[in-house]
Length: 113
Image (tube, rainbow, N blue to C red; front, side):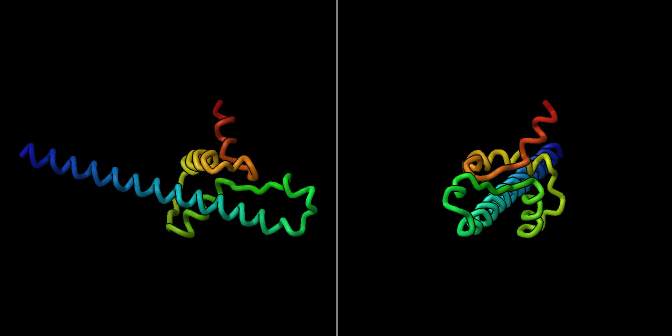
């Protein structure tokens, strides 16, 4: 009987790990979509800007934007703000967001420190 109990526990643990990995992948994709949207909105304003101001124009991607995209694309209704901010920080740095975007994902870190 013990062997069957351990096998069931291992299966449950593996299923939870797969579910968690799937959630993390969906959240990372939602962050990428939010960053892409912010960049596209910024680029849409470029024709109206004088050429000298184009290099200083900045867009914004917020944790709320990530949560909205997660809901729209994946139906993730309860994405914790701290989890969304952590993934946003990671993807923001990976995709060189500081070059042309601002974010509020670092605000939580500053409050905790």
